[in-house]
Image (cartoon, rainbow, N blue to C red; front, side, top):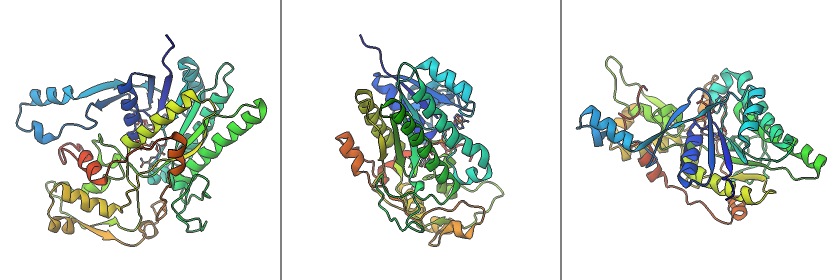
Length: 373
Ligand SMILES: NC(=O)c1ccc[n+]([C@@H]2O[C@H](COP(=O)([O-])OP(=O)(O)OC[C@H]3O[C@@H](n4cnc5c(N)ncnc54)[C@H](OP(=O)(O)O)[C@@H]3O)[C@@H](O)[C@H]2O)c1
């Protein structure tokens, strides 16, 4: 019997890494090795999201806990600090993965700005190091699948290259986060090209660009840029007054479920396992465009928040919000990704969750599920 292929997921404690880890575990065709950095125990919900609080609101605390447990698995991750290159090399040599899916990153543009050096080390140098390890194994060559972002494009502002973008469109990131992800892509291409010319062997670097993501299992609204605006819908706490908040109604996003990206990544993993020359840059994005304010309106409808209440708390801002805030990282207005090349390379297409269904599932149990906001 041939051994199961080993798939290593960096950042398996993060929003996308959790969805991919959960999907791969359900198929039992792979030996999955997940790594985290500060979070080493994560909860995988069988139905992909926690039970709504309402379902358990009238049961005893122990019955509610048992009901929640029955829907969840606790998964232990391996601790790996990707900034520690020696430890990373040893870890990979020990686990001998066939495929590495590199999800770990600093991906909050504003947090990136405030911790520039370490963020660049993680997003660029750790990625380069992973590519070098993949290309320098004496006996085998794992595929490296690197998750990048639509923020490598500028929306046409400077480049005059306008969306929708294909993988060969000219990149021109306009914030440090986008630049670091582009530099991570370049690092992989550099390492793999050197290896190709040295060994006459095609590299195995796969770059997957994705847009704004949301997870169906988040318990912190901040974890998903598609859910964070829902904070304005949380009930007022004692002593606090509700302030009007401006929500971006300027930039067009394409919120994509991590579950859907995980399905596309699984197709790529399966292809890479049978085709050692599978490489290149691919786009994976939902086609459903909306602004953050539009999303908040949709979320309010789904949660039956009266329009008057939404109007009291939030107002759509039609101007570029990052231009008005010197502390915020600049954002492009639209970086829609064209995914045709991906589906023709894979020979099939992922059916993307509608925004209605995705938002309904990811906001289940609101507000009680979102603890400690
Ligand atoms: N979220 C989005 O909207 C979005 C959009 C476009 C592209 N992307 C890209 O998609 C990928 C996944 O994003 P995500 O939303 O899942 O990110 P996330 O939820 O912020 O997760 C980041 C992961 O990186 C890990 N990590 C942080 N520092 C590390 C270190 N020094 N060593 C090892 N691991 C470290 C974290 O581990 P701990 O939590 O355990 O510390 C966590 O598992 C990233 O490459 C991101 O750039 C995301």
